[in-house]
Image (cartoon, rainbow, N blue to C red; front, side, top):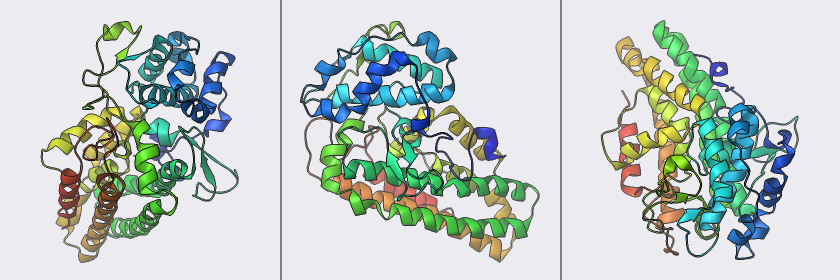
Length: 386
């Protein structure tokens, strides 16, 4: 396995290999880009739907099928923000997404084999740029390009994820090397790689620890979270959302999962590498379903890693104390990451007062109860030590 085979790199991990500001879209997208770039202004009028309904109804079926993938992904970023703003940008959710948004959104999603709403890839992985092109992808050098309302809290929430994804790049590169080390039963190499992985996990977890620096739990809950919900298990859309003018949906309400950090491929990749398994429960079923919301190449990476990794079996069979210690240290680092996620779920969501339909404190933006099962999965992760 090599990261290059999945359009990935050690310096960027699952982040896009391009930066959104470098990708130009054809002139027909000009009104869409104008609306997207002024989305916070449209939303603060209190009648964002009025403005978005005036956008031209672009027929993107042929364009999306043939355009370079990076252009399609950038168009997906812009349209998916507009779609979310249309649905959640006013006090009551609509039952129908108008054709001028629905049809382009579905055309783009079909090309990318993703769901036609805001995905984690559009919210985070493709939605960043560096201020200094000669400097790394660090928190002091990146900015969020497409926003909803904007502001430090929204930006920081996304950029923490961007920085984590970049810092995780070396972990994924090491994962590929560890698969090979286990295959060749190279104890010394596997031990060295795992010890190196432990250091990179320190960097990832240090970034995650900084979430409260500029993202306040109250602001997150009131001004960031409401716009990233989907239309699955959401009481505001009990029958889903009708995509007007999309023949294949036959006028029926569609239920799709909302954007969530659980769509990040980092932890599933580590579970695949370390051969971590989770018992059947609602969260596991949800995460299995969520796999289809990831970019195709990221799905393939996780699936190949899951199929090829025999690292845990090798570490046990080797009987080598140093290898086992290094293996356990990295497993514990993933558990530490999960613990921090659990703490943030409690402080940023569970402890916040309920605020309107569709912002349920017990249900994640992906549309599933989370607190109980996050703890369970963290504990199952930690139980994989040898």
